[in-house]
Amino acid sequence: MIPFLIFVFISGYLLITLEHSIHINKAATALITAVICWTILVLSPSIKEEALSALGHHLSSIAEIVFFLLGAMTIVELIDAHDGFQNITEKIKTTNKNKLIWTISIVTFFLSAILDNLTSTIVMISIINKLVKEKMVKWQLLGLVIISSNAGGAWSPIGDVTTTMLWIGHQVTPLNIIKETFLASLTCMIVPTLIISYRIKGSIDLHETTLINQNALSNARDRNLVFFIGIACLLFVPIFKTITHLPPYMGMLFSLGIMWVLTELLHHKKDVDEKGILSVNHALRKIDTPSILFFFGILMSIAALEQIGLLKEAADYLDHTIGDIKLIAVIIGLLSSVLDNVPLVAALQSMYSLQVYPTDHYFWELLAYTAGTGGSVLIIGSAAGVAVMGLEKIDFFWYLKNISWIALIGFIVGALVFILENA
Image (cartoon, rainbow, N blue to C red; front, side):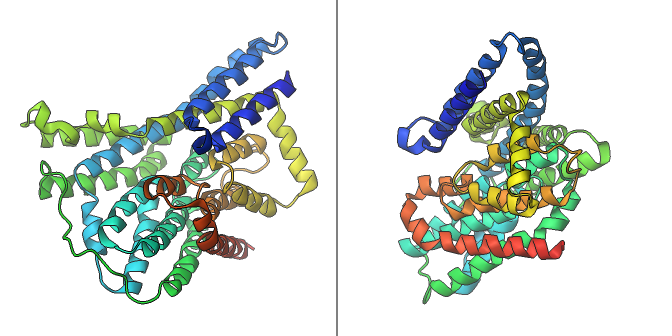
């Protein structure tokens, strides 16, 4: 039974990594893998009852992440529907090369911490396309966006799904993860920005077209109101958790409810057709549902491995062969450039209990940094990279030759800063 379960999981994982080659969405593969893994468990008479009982427990903990992501994505879609991110676009436009590069990098870094690395990357792709003419310059800036968005998401409890998972799993707390990983993440962004600003020679040719509001139905007052209240609602989630001690998804759903009421009041005089894309109903249809289903499927698959004790054995093996938790965390970060960081972090959460490494332990904080930033080393290693690759058709080997080594230097220097800071 165990060899068959491992075979199914590895096969599913390989198909997920080959998503773009086999043209099958990784969400479909993850869901099928999860169901087959749990079917194998319940068809084993010796553990059937135990598996059925544990399934509900795993579903409950994974649903917290799913509902958190659902609320966050909907709020971001609402802001985008009202052209709220135009406020950022207008602030970035400049003819000074160094100022433009650093502005893009810093805005991406902090935007990713407030939203998430995938959403902030999509916003920055739109902005850079409006600003920059030359293809190779644009590609280098987009490489910098991948690095900066992953670095910005790593130190924020709502900026990267892996940091969110560690927060929801009680491995880290919001204020502590910000305090302990911010400097390392900032270094991971600054070093590549210095290198890329040196590599881009001369001035950057900008489009002369003015930036206009793409949604004629959304006026400036509504746009600014939705943008600032939306950002405030996202920032309120960790505060709500600290005050009430309720799980983070409750704070996110509360924030979504606030945004829902706000947009309904803003547009209540408009008819259904006119309200259109400005409504929560439309935002719910636009959110990246396949990504949510992928998280659910892969986490349920890993839960099946946890249920039969495989992850505990893997943790014991790592402890005996490598031993150094710093090295383990760095290896996981580099692996996340090849494999998906969500299942890697989920596996470590199951492998090492809070009794071994309690909340806010050094290991969890370093893992949040490495798993969040390591994916920048390859363009396929993060959601931000995959988005850029898909939307801008950046070649895998071009990125490997021109950006990967820069991202690797930033990753290593940031990790050294974290280790020295906590020495």
